[in-house]
Amino acid sequence: MRLLPLALLLTAAPAAAQVDDPPPDSLDGEPLVLDVAFAAPGDTVVVVHYAVQAERQADFEDAVAALMAALTDAAGAGTLAPEAEAAYATLRVLYPAAAADDGTLPYVFVFEPAPTASADVAALVAAVPDDARDARLHESLARPPVRLVVTPSGY
Picture 1 (tube, rainbow, N blue to C red):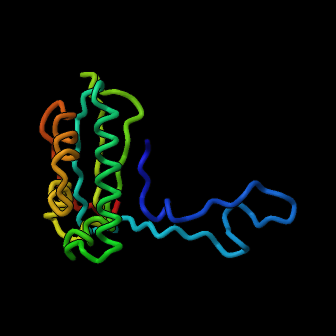
Picture 2: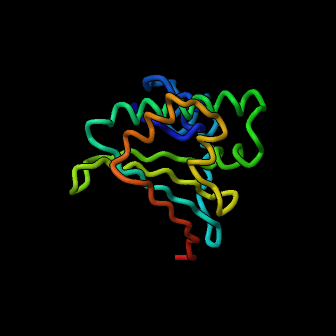
């Protein structure tokens, strides 16, 4: 299972192109605009790397899907704390294309732009607790996650 930014999940793809259909970069003749923000120079970006045991990949992905569903439900119900909701709104999950040299699978959670330098996956997990899901997340890891806070330059 692959997770996409929420804006991509909520954006319907155009049907198969026909002669009278709008071009693929539009829906019903309106330009297709995805609500995906990227960091500008000087914004804070928080990156959290998880090294997942290959044999636990399905458990980890199921737990991440359950976490994202719980966060979406809580945000929709208005029960998510403002800090967690702001962090969740900027979260992207990148899935591995291949295993790392040590056989683990690298999953990267990116808060871009992060609402604060303290944005973290652990805080989102704590915002919508579920002991079984949380155990699957932690048991799937080959080692503790690595968290980086960066500020892009004007490259």
